[in-house]
Amino acid sequence: MENPPAAQAMSPARTRLLRTLDVIVVFLRIGVTGFGGPATLIAMTQDEVVQRRKWLTREHFVDIVGITNLIPGPNATEIAIMVGYLYAGWLGLLAAGGSVVLPAAIISSALGWMYVEWGTLPAVAPLFLGIKPVVTTIVLAAVWRLSGTVTRDWRLVAIGLATALAALAYGNEIAALLLGGVLGAVWLHLSRTLPGIKGRAAAILVGLAASGWLSAKTALAAAALLVNQIRHVPLWDIGFFFLKIGSVLYGSGYVLIAFLEGGLVRDLGWLTSQQLLDAIAVGQFTPGPLLSTASFIGYLLGGVPGAAVATAGVFGPSFVIVALLAPWLPRLRRARWAGLFLDAVGAASIGLMAAVGLRLGQQALTDIPAWLIALAAAWAGLRLKVNFTWLVLGGAIAGWLLWAVGVWQV
Image 1 (cartoon, one colour):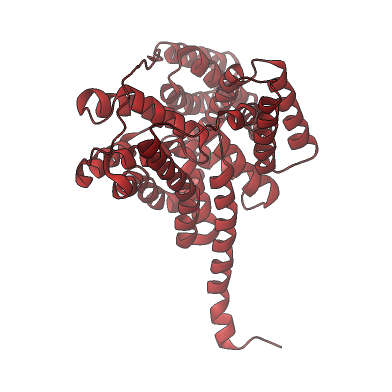
Image 2: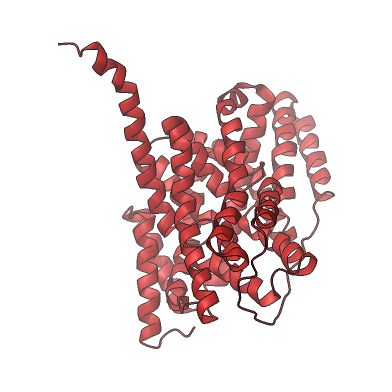
């Protein structure tokens, strides 16, 4: 028996609503447990929407990773926003972004209140001791899973490896990614259209052009005087400052540090160097996007309203840019040169994730307990298919227990 017309008319709306609720559940969990920065968020998103729920294919997900790396804003958040749109439409776009951003913003604002009231941050370092090795494992596991999209073509493998080496050697991730996409697309075209020796010659020329372009990055140094008080900077100024950052910030949340040091400490004098370092620490040990540091800083500058406008300013452009870009992604894939570019930049993005995983490993795997936690997490995640969320929570508990019995020192 057929459904009545009214029920048929409600079916698409009901489907969108149910899909939106699914989006909220998935990305709220990621937002609450996604410790370790953008690479971890991307890995957890890939695990949920590709491995477990089959919302997207690996190839489609790699396209999204590649394209979001080339637009302003926090790419992990933009990946969530785009996945939400592709799965559940405009409501899904808002639901995914909000679910990832709001937990981190609320936690960071609460820590800002504690910082102002007590003059210090709560002692969560023991938990983070165990989370860091797990984060390394999660990132490298995601690289392993996504690598199947590039191993079908040795040229894509070469682009990914070259990008990873460039990022590790020079440190300029944006230059490496852009070169991997643009020069990789040129190489893919030439190597597929030119025979034998000509194709190899084209590869050598492309490699020489890339090596002449990359430059080294500089490091941030700071020290200081702690001044814990809300400065009550005008909300308009706070919002405009973070809106500018959200509109032009490329790459991972770590790039944010240079913007904040130059703007808030040196140019405007709104924060001391120590306050900036404490704000960065908040971004490190809270879940969700690293740009939640903006919520903490916003609270220091203007209380709860300051936290709200700083969060809206730094994340708002991502919603707008992805909303404009998402409907065009399928058309980009069908265009020849755009398709080659997406292939190349997708391989380059996986290479960058591998470089991030190796750097995290250098920082986190410094003793035997860290290695044991990382290996246990790798076995549980890859062999037993344990959800990354539980791996993070397990790492936190293991870190606290090892600290409590005196094995680890903070």
